Image 1 (spheres, helix red, strand yellow):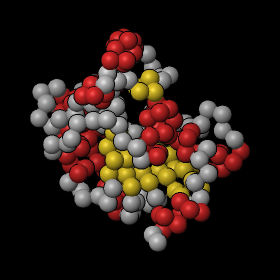
Image 2: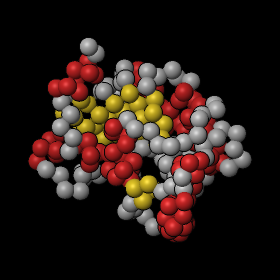
Image 3: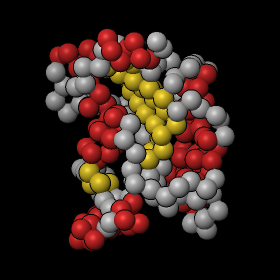
Length: 221
């Protein structure tokens, strides 16, 4: 029996969350802290945070360790890595800065996890990702997926959410309008259109932790 399987049975699993202060990352941390299978949750963050759980219990707070990223040349060791790193062109301001986070930083974190022998890695990408896309955002997402798959990881789960429903720290008028439209169309988003349906952040985090994949297209990378 592998060490990862033993940890799951004994409640000694160690999970690492990269991008722990973002919308999805914060929710992943919250759910991991409340899950008895996990003895330790390591939150990697590029910005300061007091705690990733809104209402942490004494037990869950003891399980959480926050580490600023980058962390030098250290490898990442544990049972699972959840990568929720990402930015926007508005925040990054340039395409180069955007790529540095959504491609380079994601790839760097996963490579460190690979060196540390982490058996399962889950990464958030986006619906419509395609390395050959003319849309810069979709192209970068597709390129990082291609490069992650080329690493030959034991298990790589890539998630392609459409609109994320949840409370954000910053106001994004475009996403708010898009979510309203998607919400109205959601009942009709079945079959091939299922991948475009909006999803609650709480549900996406739950599915990632459980290892359930979203409806999506077959990768052609």
